[in-house]
Length: 73
Image (cartoon, rainbow, N blue to C red; front, side, top):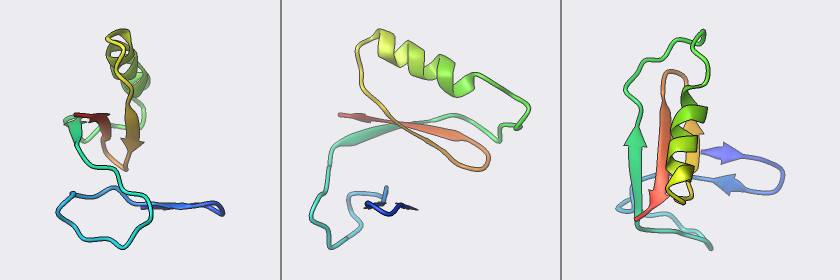
Protein backbone atom coordinates (compact mmCIF):
# COMPACT_ATOMS: atom_id res chain seq x y z
CA UNK A 1 0.00 0.00 0.00
CA UNK A 2 1.27 3.46 -0.91
CA UNK A 3 -0.35 6.69 0.23
CA UNK A 4 0.33 10.14 -1.18
CA UNK A 5 -1.56 13.41 -0.90
CA UNK A 6 -3.38 12.52 -4.12
CA UNK A 7 -4.19 8.83 -3.73
CA UNK A 8 -3.86 5.52 -1.95
CA UNK A 9 -2.71 2.55 -4.03
CA UNK A 10 -3.17 -1.00 -2.78
CA UNK A 11 -1.72 -4.03 -4.55
CA UNK A 12 -3.27 -7.30 -3.42
CA UNK A 13 -4.83 -10.51 -4.66
CA UNK A 14 -8.01 -9.95 -6.66
CA UNK A 15 -9.69 -12.31 -4.17
CA UNK A 16 -9.20 -9.67 -1.47
CA UNK A 17 -12.34 -7.54 -1.11
CA UNK A 18 -11.74 -3.78 -1.14
CA UNK A 19 -14.24 -0.95 -1.32
CA UNK A 20 -12.72 1.08 -4.11
CA UNK A 21 -13.77 3.29 -6.98
CA UNK A 22 -10.95 2.05 -9.18
CA UNK A 23 -9.98 -1.61 -9.39
CA UNK A 24 -7.93 -3.36 -12.00
CA UNK A 25 -7.94 -7.12 -12.39
CA UNK A 26 -6.05 -9.62 -14.53
CA UNK A 27 -2.45 -8.91 -13.60
CA UNK A 28 0.43 -11.36 -13.75
CA UNK A 29 3.49 -10.98 -11.54
CA UNK A 30 7.18 -11.77 -11.77
CA UNK A 31 9.01 -11.86 -8.44
CA UNK A 32 12.78 -11.42 -8.49
CA UNK A 33 14.25 -14.09 -6.25
CA UNK A 34 15.77 -12.31 -3.27
CA UNK A 35 16.85 -11.13 -0.92
CA UNK A 36 18.75 -8.53 -2.92
CA UNK A 37 21.55 -6.64 -1.24
CA UNK A 38 21.33 -2.83 -1.43
CA UNK A 39 24.83 -2.73 -2.96
CA UNK A 40 23.46 -4.39 -6.11
CA UNK A 41 22.53 -1.91 -8.83
CA UNK A 42 20.69 -2.07 -12.14
CA UNK A 43 18.61 -5.21 -11.52
CA UNK A 44 15.24 -3.45 -11.80
CA UNK A 45 16.46 -1.50 -14.82
CA UNK A 46 17.79 -4.52 -16.73
CA UNK A 47 14.63 -6.56 -16.22
CA UNK A 48 12.36 -3.59 -17.00
CA UNK A 49 14.28 -2.90 -20.21
CA UNK A 50 14.04 -6.54 -21.32
CA UNK A 51 10.26 -6.45 -20.78
CA UNK A 52 9.97 -3.07 -22.54
CA UNK A 53 11.88 -4.47 -25.52
CA UNK A 54 8.92 -6.84 -25.95
CA UNK A 55 6.53 -3.82 -25.90
CA UNK A 56 5.00 -4.89 -22.56
CA UNK A 57 4.00 -2.23 -20.04
CA UNK A 58 4.83 -2.90 -16.40
CA UNK A 59 4.00 -1.71 -12.93
CA UNK A 60 7.19 -2.19 -10.92
CA UNK A 61 7.35 -2.43 -7.14
CA UNK A 62 10.41 -2.60 -4.95
CA UNK A 63 10.21 -3.77 -1.37
CA UNK A 64 12.91 -4.15 1.24
CA UNK A 65 14.61 -7.24 -0.19
CA UNK A 66 13.28 -7.85 -3.71
CA UNK A 67 11.43 -6.44 -6.73
CA UNK A 68 8.13 -7.31 -8.41
CA UNK A 69 6.98 -6.67 -11.98
CA UNK A 70 3.25 -6.65 -12.64
CA UNK A 71 1.90 -6.90 -16.20
CA UNK A 72 -1.64 -6.96 -17.51
CA UNK A 73 -2.55 -10.55 -18.41
